[in-house]
Image (cartoon, rainbow, N blue to C red; front, side):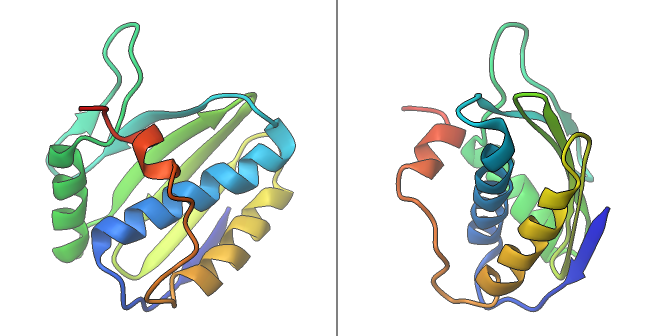
Length: 137
């Protein structure tokens, strides 16, 4: 498991997207084009799992719930999956940790990238990423 503390000028909704994007991007290095799945999100209010036969996405309500927890100093836990890789991620307003099951070297890559990106007011984020992890309306 790799952990980092950070200070960031960006709002918590953007932090959520940046963290999710770079976890996905770095895991894709070893897992290729396999689908990136949000398997579980645990906030102080609820545990969110995908409905049977569906994918879990970041709805506006879920994004607000996560941002609210981060604003309140709470920790939010995520389980992501891409191919054979499972990533346990913990995010708070000022810390991040990641543990992967298959390729532990990507933990360091994720932390190194987030140390750079979370300091920026306008981080690197692919425009097409948010629609992939949020519901289409």
